[in-house]
Image 1 (cartoon, rainbow, N blue to C red):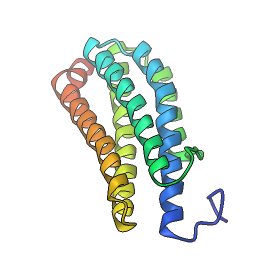
Image 2: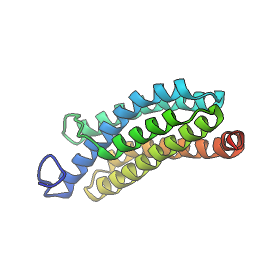
Image 3: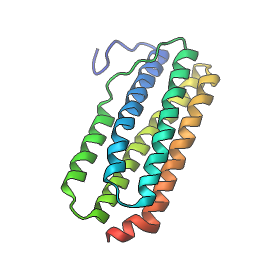
Length: 167
């Protein structure tokens, strides 16, 4: 059985399991983002986090749509990776006293989350296409596009403001 809740025998089983994984991750992110919004001091960073919270809520709805399209009920399985990223972000934020450096730490943590999500969505899209589920791939592509756009916005914000102020 290994790390998974049940034996995974087919690519379809793996697709569903990974869909459950990212569903869990997105739900955890909706719990973590309000805390990050509260801790951030940069108005642009706060606004970016607020915008992404709304996007994440829509991404959860799209995931629920993919579950339905694939004949599954929405279900989450614990994602140790996202738990670790969020735990590390919380610990790091608790260790930083300087507000400008805290913003840089929060931004870096947010990018770690984005990169995880980008890899998951890219994989799910590839598998959906392989399974002949272009309909599911299309919905998942919307989430991937938003994650990439958020990562790019964070990169620009880091380079133009947050990291400069932290230095």
